[in-house]
Image (cartoon, rainbow, N blue to C red; front, top):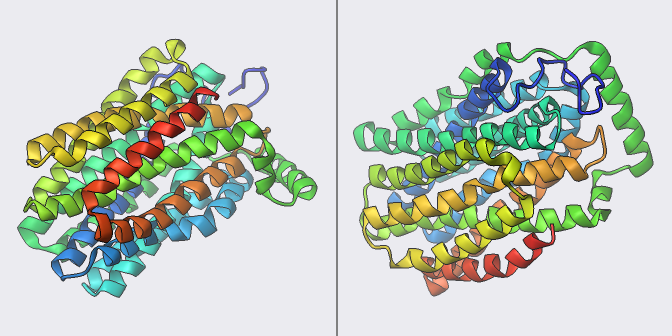
Length: 404
């Protein structure tokens, strides 16, 4: 494969096909679904089990925060591992950790076991995500192509957000939490099978990447020097606000559903509607990539998210919550391809893995702190009011998105 300048690409795989599915891209998508569905199912089921055990909203916030704590520490090493070793080694580690999380949840219903499962599954899913995004970025031959590839790749978390929570909700209602956790724990193993369709990087590519990374680290010592780029700071701030929007929806929805006496299947179905709308908008983006501006899409998505959060607390039935979830999914679903495309544009060559890791740190820092804050505020002002606070923050942040 060659990049836009006609030089051999770093991934050693097949050439891009103008945004169409290749076997390698399909394998990346299915591999991420296998990992991410386990994590999202656990992230929906663990809070429900805690609530059924009589735990407080603070305890629910702790469990959700733990899904993001390990990735904060591991994201930068995972990014460097992807830069240095390519795809297969970090994927194997990701599968092992995520599978272990499912096993921990299956073996014991105790709250501590849920916390351990959250740590392991969060770490594994994040390491796999960084490796997959790194490989996908190296497959692209230009900005338009990169938007298309990341749009297709964005189907993976969207579909896994359907598969994981819906599967967990159905199995909880039919057979209980333990069976649900056992089935979720087996999902990551499929990623190993799909990895066979992703070509291994040639040794000379791995050696060149390791040498370039070593030189960059000798000069900068840390990836944090990427924050000296003004465009990187603005992009990460916008990404942080949009990630927090996703987090508040993930946190508040099970609580609202529990308060309004929705079943686990109904709550899972609402999350499934949200995820399906994310997938739908990401199917459209490759067809419109040449007409889209990253800054306009991001600013529009933030304004739409703010408006939906204002309306969401007034939805009291399952169908009305599903409608809000659908609209929110369409707004947030358009964001990730634009952010990843811009991230690769502003990042120096051979440091894309570090940049992805830095983005992951900021996202997971938000995902670990926000549930704790949401738990405190939810106990004080009510869970529904969190949507209104987030609407103010995201609406104000849309001004930053316009400057990208």
